[in-house]
Amino acid sequence: MSGKSGWLMSLSLAGVGIVGALIGSTVQYYFSLQQERSKAFEEHQTDAYVSLLDALDKERMSRQTDDKAAAAKLNQQYELEAGAAVHRIAVFGDKQVVEALAEWYRRSSSLVPCEKSIEPEVTTLKLMRDTSVGRGQEVSAEDLGAILGRCILTLKR
Image (cartoon, rainbow, N blue to C red):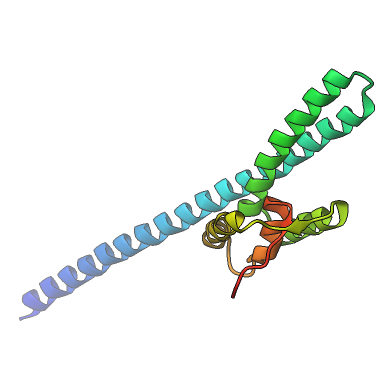
């Protein structure tokens, strides 16, 4: 009898060890995946911020040059690069940055009501953002409309 119970005890301990190893490796995999995702997200965020700052430098340089052709080229580069950076910030940016950018657009230009055609674009962008950022980082569709279309968005609720 004692031989059989010793055998069962050994088998039980081996089973517990195997289950523990499986659970441990699964948890470790999950945490490494979360860490990699967080690192990639932060890289997207940083890249978007730096890209916007680089674009703003081009806009500033376009105002300082006397060469109209060079100014036009710098301004065109600014428009393209700033637009792409702002889109990335809208998806990956920190809530406070997105809100500040929207407020900056509201104060620095006269925003007009958005055309109806931009509403699906803003709604899609909001869904992209809401599924990409963590809780507490949600921003309003109105802020996204201000930075995406540089217009005042009035979505029906």
